[in-house]
Length: 436
Ligand SMILES: *Cc1c(COP(=O)(O)O)cnc(C)c1O
Image (tube, rainbow, N blue to C red; front, side, top):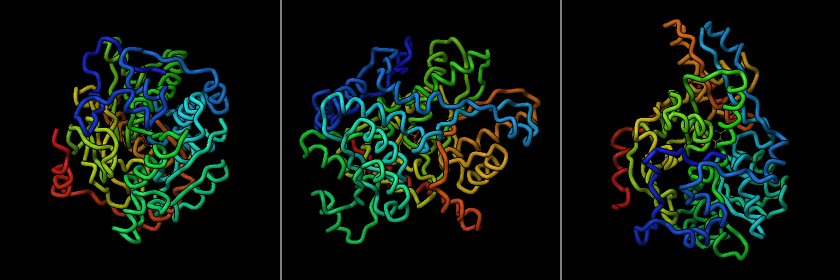
C-alpha cells in the first residue's frame, strides 16, 4: 500500500477536533475508529505500509483486477489514442469499495471487536462491508438512507444475505434518529443523518467501532492497491500512461489509482496529467472552497481541510449515487490546491450517453459513477483524433451498474435532467462553513 511520497513538503492538513480546534489525537479517534486504522490515518512517515497476508489471501479471490486495453472503444472512436481501464467491478459487491472494506474488517477483527457500524447511501459500501464482515465473522450494522432502502431492495437483500443487519435511517433505534424523526416526521433521510446514527451505535455499544468507505487517508491507502497493480502491469509491458482519469466522490478510487504515479510525479521522476471528474450537480473541486469543514451533516465528525460545498449542501436528486458527498479527500484537496492534478465536471445525460456508448462496444455495463471517467476518457480520445496525438489514456472503471437500472431507464426514456446548482445556492451552504 502506498502512503505518502517522499520529498514533497505539503502534507494534507490534519483533522481537527471541532471542540478544541487542535489536531485530533490517536486517543480521541480511537473511541470511534479501530486502533490500527487510526494509526494509518495519522501516519505521516511511512512511504509504504505492507498488506497483511490475511488481506492478500482475500484479494486473491478477485485481484489482481483486470487492466484492459479498450480496443473496441478505440476502434469505434477511430482515435490514435490508446485507452486502458482498470476494472474494479469484478467482485460481487460490484465496486472498488471491497478493497478497503476487507482491510477495515481485518483490523477490527484483529483488535478483538465484535462488530462494526456504518452508513450507506447508494449501497455499494454497505454491500462491500457486509461481504468483508462475513469473511471475518464480524457483526455488521448498516444504516441505510431510507429512500435508498426503499428504492433499492436488491442492494439491501445482498447485504442481508451476507449477514448484515440493515436499518433504514433515520430510525427509532438511536437517540439522534428519534430526534430527527420527531423534528422531520416522514423524512426520507440523508447520508449525514445515517452517519450520525452509525457513529452513535458504535460509541454506545461495547466492542463496536465505526468504519467509513471513502474520504479518509486510510481508505485512499487501502485503495492504492488499484494503482500499484496498474503500474506493475504497465511496467511489465514498458507502457507509460500520459493521462490518468478517475471519478471523484470522496476521492478514494482516484487517490488509489494515482498513488504510485503521483509519487513519481512528486519526486520528479515522471510526469502525468491527472484528471478528477465530478458530477456538475456536486462540484466540490471545481466550485467548492478549500477550507476546514465537517464531514457529516450532524457535525459530530472531526473537521477536515478540503474542497467543500459545505456540510449543509444537499445535491439535487441525481443518479451519481456514490459521488454525492459535499467534500473531498484532504490528500487530493492538497494536491489539487498545489496544481498537481486537474478537475472537471460532467452532466448526467452526457455521463449516461458515455456509459451506453461504452457498454455497447466494451460489453461491461458501467456504474453511473464510473461513467464520469468514461465520459472524459472519450473526450480526451476524441481530442487525440483531432490532433493526431497517440496518447495513452488510463481511466478507473470503478464498478458495474446492475443496481442502477432505474437510472438507465430514466435516461432511455428521456426523463433525465441536468440540474446544476446556482452560485447563490452554493454560496448559501459555503457561508455556513465553520469559522476556524
Ligand atoms: C463509491 C463509489 C465511487 C466514489 O467514491 P470514491 O471514494 O470517490 O472513489 C465511485 N464509483 C463507484 C462504483 C462507487 O461505488
